[in-house]
Image (tube, rainbow, N blue to C red; front, side):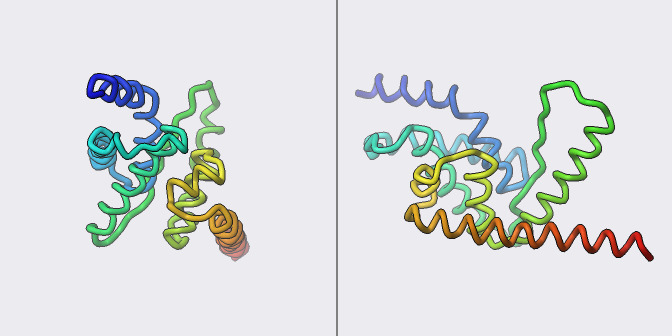
Amino acid sequence: MSFYKENEIEEWYSQYHQTIFKYIILMVKDSQQAEDLTQETFLRAYKHHHTYKRDSSPKTWLFRIAHNSTVDHLRKMKPIRLFHQVFQKEQTVSSEDIVILKENSCELYDALNNLKDNYKQVIILRKIKGFSILETAHILDWSESKVKSTLFRAMQTLTEHMKGEVNHEEKRFRK
């Protein structure tokens, strides 16, 4: 069993290390801390492999561990800073496109940073990381209906924040 477990964890690590790291860095805003928490995620997965019931995908199970590890870390931190801009664009873009992307991304992440923690978490998992409702429910240990309703309220609040920023900028330029 141990050899099988080690091979499976190694395979999961090679498949999911980067995506889990990117998820964690969005939460902790520190690449070194994100790397440490990513390692902790896989150590926990190794130690608790026997608890994996296979009722969800390995990716969902690992993200649940990553989420719990990150939340545990954030609870210990004062003040909590939750987001970091991680933008990687592999295709060629003009410098103007890069500036626009960074401006829009900065505004989005600033608005996200003003949301309640559960709103941030559900938006990151559903809209940024692309998890399904069921997978998000497993990761956050919520019901599917809570994921849906929280995401709806979070997106409404995010939209209001973004509109507020746009209106504020328009007023500033009119003066």
